[in-house]
Length: 146
Length: 146
DNA sequence: GCCTAATTGAAAACGAATTTCAACTTAGAC
DNA sequence: GTCTAAGTTGAAATTCGTTTTCAATTAGGC
Ligand SMILES: [Mn+2]
Ligand SMILES: [Mn+2]
Ligand SMILES: [Zn+2]
Ligand SMILES: [Zn+2]
Image (tube, each protein chain N blue to C red):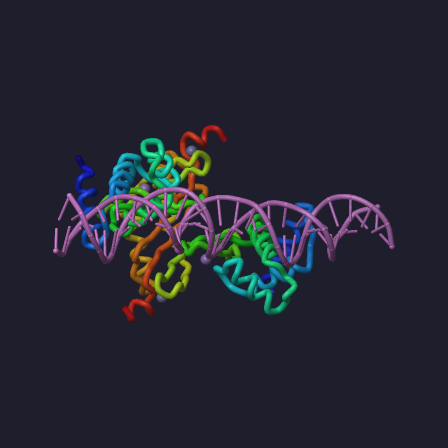
């Protein structure tokens, strides 16, 4: 399974941090990896509830934050007021196209844009730590209806 | 005064929308234009309170939203959990470099990046409505201390 | 001035995120 | 296996920025 590496990374993280491996944490990671990208805490919580009603919202919240600390997940904000999480592609990076109409999210990566960002920051004597590029669009499907 | 155009635009907006010109709205616009960019509702409210304690937070909040509707201000989010507003440069656009350490914000515009964004969206058959590009950096001052 | 509709500000409500805390679970020591 | 200390859990409470409510006030056409 391609996810075993991620699971191992989380286990290691728990160990080195003096944290404990619990059934909830395993279930939440399992479902997080199964669910696909860009889900809110609520999204994940509801998915988990269906299979196991004995999981609390607070635990899902806390565990997602652990994922982010550990580096296996990243938190995103697309302007709808709630945080979303997605699994990290290790050292891969991508930005997002977000449809204003239907909410569809498409990922992209453009090395030319990445280069120019570094250049721009450099011109100011700044070093980029991270960046966020969100393109808010009408997707091809939603453009038609207009 | 360079701001008289903006004030006129807001007056016109109020008229066409059937809204009223009030003392509070004038004071808030005055201070908003004086204060400079990227202030939160709270920021502006506190500035106004010093000069005129008879202004409510709710009114500042509502008036900033009017500014945005009118097109004389834009709302921004830099990830610290509160909305910020800045005066619109008419049809000019810019993005932001934000120092993670001291919070300093520098504006920039790079037409090459803008072009590439349009190209990327086009490749997916999408049309860009708006975008957000935030570069989180250590500014030249804060890089030194590290 | 008069009247109506819009505006105001204090307080309440909202919603997502976060914290509290008593009960429970884990993992290492014995 | 049993004990124990430390970490974890989930329901409920709290926080914090934003937004709404509502009774009192104000603007502006007549
Ligand atoms: Mn993504
Ligand atoms: Mn700006
Ligand atoms: Zn769409
Ligand atoms: Zn700095």
